[in-house]
Length: 431
Image (tube, rainbow, N blue to C red; front, side):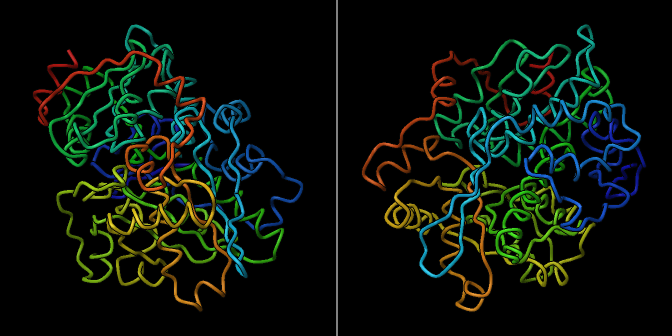
């Protein structure tokens, strides 16, 4: 299968799309044509790696990686992704728990897949591939964990200083010598602009062999579509119904993966995006004008994105706002509503949710009676609440147990450098 840019460049192979991260014209890679599936194509397929192999095999056509698919998927899906039923009388609602990986956030799936692929494509220790990753909280830690100590790989993590939780910040900075952690004196959008600017700079990219591990890289999105396929197939087999999904979203990568799965024929019903106070998407649906803006700092820090990159893919695949708003719902959730939802979740379900997951549970509670009652729902839990203990614990009145994976990371020493949000400053620390 070949991959083209949303702006017209290409096509290139999957291997080159993974290596490059972003197209030469600044666009984002998409496959020439999405494969089409029926639920029956997954008959006899019971595990997530098996679902992933059926779903993703067409994307590997012509790739050097085709003979490694089993090993790549075994590495990627090495931890459970359960859908836990929620105690809501008269309704079939579950929580898709995407936070059981090594950095207890959903980004572990995409980052693990990308690392498993690139480590098999690249191995030049003398001239390593440099993975640039801008993060609003969770992506950088997942990418650093996935690439930590891999030969021929260097990771550069850029995160906005003071705009991530303390535990998130530690997770971004506690890795081996092949990971350079940079706190940027700006916003996530500044970090993302630095990544795109560096990759578009011929001198810098020539010197450092850049690739990206943000969701601008198609390698992040392909495996994420798998857990939507798996969850929807399991639900459909059990009930005969297509579940709806409510997805917390910032840069739109996770939501796009769900929409891509639905476009491929998986049994997925309504899709609703839960955003925080950063209203770029909801304003686009209302005004029909795409107007990116500076991001606002909120309790759901990993969603603090004012210019979601994957909207470019979404518009290319599905259509402009007048079409998109017929196929997607969206709700903006304030910090006050996030706090109220965390309290309510604990009271209703008996366990804590993180601020990002709380945008999804709040959104579910706002559904009108017909929408809530006519569909079963899967709410997406994107991170473990222990990463946000300073927010969550005062709201629920007790400590959140720290999972073993996070505890192990917090015990490691941290290293970080500070830079200004300029290419000159980034070039200096890259050496």
